[in-house]
Amino acid sequence: VGGRVRLTDLAGGTYLRAQPLGVRGDTARVALLGTYALLLAGDDLRMEITVGPGVWLELVEPSGMVAYDARGGAASWRADLNVADGACLVWRGAPFVVTAGADITRETRVRLSGSGRALVHETLVLGRSYESSGGPLRSVTRADVDGRPLLWRTSTCGIRCCPRPPGSWAATGCRARPSCSAPARSGRWACGRPCCTVPAPWPGRWRSTPTRRTRGSLTPGSGGGRSSPIR
Image (cartoon, rainbow, N blue to C red):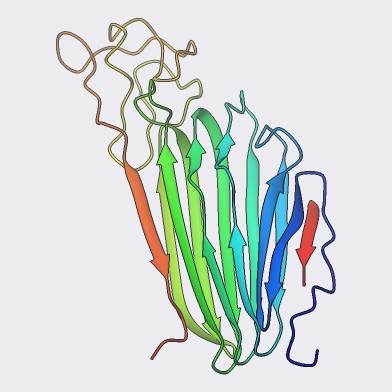
């Protein structure tokens, strides 16, 4: 309004709240602060962020987010990002850590209009420092410009920690396998939780693959649950 940004709606939810950090001309900085221990089994975190025409919005995450062992449950995280013509959204996301035993679906949806631009940086970490891996994690990133598809990326990775019929082992993506910290017949997965007794396909212990860390950035336009809307 009058060449200056105005934050019209900073409604928070159960999990996050938006804290303005400053407004200068057509540029605004907003921090996303956690208000609840997350992500736990059953959590459904949804964010809606809208950037108006000609506005530059930078989102800041002071700390990373941890998805904890769901103990048989699941949780989800979703961000809907809407960028108007001539606007720009910058979001350098903090690390998103998926611990062993977590079952997470993460989705990022970007909708650009006209010359709108978005720079979204994601760091997905499988497992904490003492875990061989984490998950499973299903990550989906979709972007379109004026309704036309620009990017659609889907990835699934991490260990699935759940009971399986004897004689089988479970893993999805990233070539993750049960941890080598326990004998092959101990019946424990990388998270340390008891599972079915698994016969070893070779003598000795299971072999494991080091934690995979994935990074990705998105720069389009150059060339049920509780919601936390930011407009």
